Image (cartoon, rainbow, N blue to C red; front, side, top):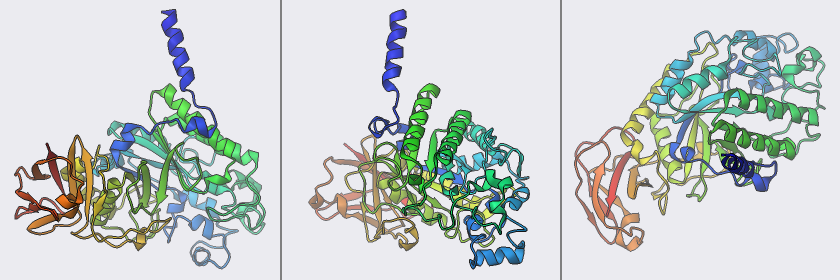
Length: 483
């Protein structure tokens, strides 16, 4: 007995992650993430209240000459009279229903979900002992993170949180004595005093860099967040490279070691070069890969072409666009994290709900070609050309019926065509001349239909004769049973 306990203790000791990249790169990406493919999160906070143009309202309202500054002064008054802090009491969330939200996420087909725990504005959406600028003491007067954690897990999904606090460093003009951002009384919200001109976009050197106090608070809040709610995934926005490397490494070690203690398999994400390759999962923003990758990756995008938070004049993507995006991403070894924008009083707009439910209906019919799959030898074929790079999704043309994507699972091949091709589907990648199909085809079915389809394999293509009636809308998935 003593020997067995000693052996177990030794094994746990060997598994411990150290705060260096070499150790952290040993952390595996869990199977649940590789299988899940689709998740939902939401930008929701005091920045939702003005509902004007962008979640960056909280930053732009302090920028002299900016159109949002002009709008703010006309609508709410001068920034020295009505600052960002004054939106917090208007962030009421009286219609917030965590159980209803989680049920909607599950019905949409999401396998992981959760809130933005803290955006760039310094307002924590959980019950924090480290600040009184949180959703329990102010605004909603309830622990949003706790409510969502309970509801999301109850619906059988993995729970995630996202963290953007590093952007707080110089987000507000704490150097400007003409605004409330410089008032020491509000330093817990607006952050430390920094020199004028410190704010820069991501991937640009910040001078001066945050000091140890800011770095430590960044880490302390993360430690509190993870210990209270044990998230299955912690997602980071970009610009995390302004945080000292040793603090980023310490966070990852803390998270991975805590997960061993919790008995959870966890995922951390990063953007750009904010963490070492292989230490966490690479995440793209409003973009995707043009080719299949040999490593798993994530992309985050908003259902609104214009903003991440709720705005009064949204331009929502169609369910068809989201489906095509998801299929393309999954074929290239990626997963999609879709953002939605709740209203400040805690409602999910009807137009958002309808799109999520449409997506759920599509996944109910075609999810076999998505969930639990892995990339095939090639991601697909067709005329759609994808532009890679940060914030490039708006440049990508819509897919058509000649765009085809492949996935594989349990020895079977799935063909998903991003539009109804008519009477026959021709797949040139599976023609004899392509040399990619190394097993004989036993049968082919259209997902959602019980009938076996007739087909012919020629030198140029696999030709599948289609039924007169299509199954569902948007993309259509075919299961190719291989001998």
